[in-house]
Length: 429
Image (cartoon, helix red, strand yellow):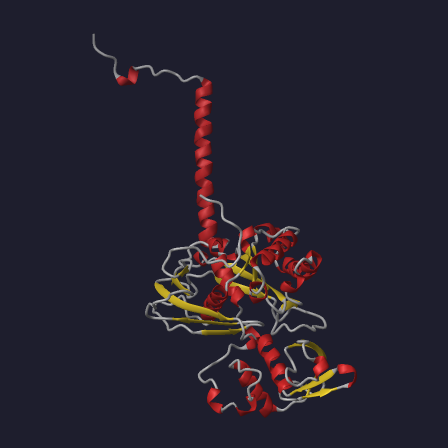
């Protein structure tokens, strides 16, 4: 018996519900494919992704005050490869505060265009309400700069410097706990290890990153010589420079890969060379040189050559008048004096140089030679301040952008995460 031809063979008929299931599956697959194609078209043709930006908030808790910075970024992988801005770092779109920031009747010591509360948080040990009063206005201002719908996914880093570094570690940790309690009252994204005290070396390294990124050193196909940093703070002076050869004691040496190039940065912090510390030394020097007037009731007045004629202010001087006091006044190292301006440019230069080299208060600073002048230094235009907070936002927020080739610095030869002066105890893994 001959087999039936294929054309005459009867195929089994699928039940209706099997046909319906197969149809639904085919439609679902088609919809997924269409969604993928539409998303690809929007990203690569309509410019949808290039309009997406994100934000980083950094609170700089310094010795003289607390400042807030907000950075708006665009990830570098959102730019075509032909763009001149195709950097390893994300693209900085905007920095707040800026020239449009209106701060009525500013009386603080905040240089350039910044927003600051005073004094530093190290003055609020055991004073949670004082810490809240310092931080709340700054965080509320940041909330105005960041769109409301982005608050919950915007990280906030609270990083303290020399003021809290001077405190005992347990006392500083208590201050950090009070800071964390305030930050949690707001909607910004925060983790415990984002609230900490920076080491002086970290602060210097972040400043080095900020300076060289601002000056366009990174992101080039050829390696450019980097710039060294001298960052004058309130209590300390940060120094950072790239070194070419390894050194025997590599404490304070950071190794980073930025783009295609490796960098070895030596960073240091000098705690006695900040602006406020240096100014304090000038007042003590003036008291030693008898540049003061003793008024009635044991009050004193000191004229300062670096201050204007109209300046007058009560000033607490630590260590003034040693050897120049009557016997009944000796033993008291803290004096409330009336500090007045007596401008004298030549005298101001002499005493400023003496303070800069940390000359002993009892030395004759008026005979300091001109050999102590520094040469070959330059400064950044104050209208566009370069703060170490920019470097902190780049390194601390490294996980916020994609396609960035920067690696975390390593302190010394060990492959570690960023060193932390004070931070939360890590759980064992």
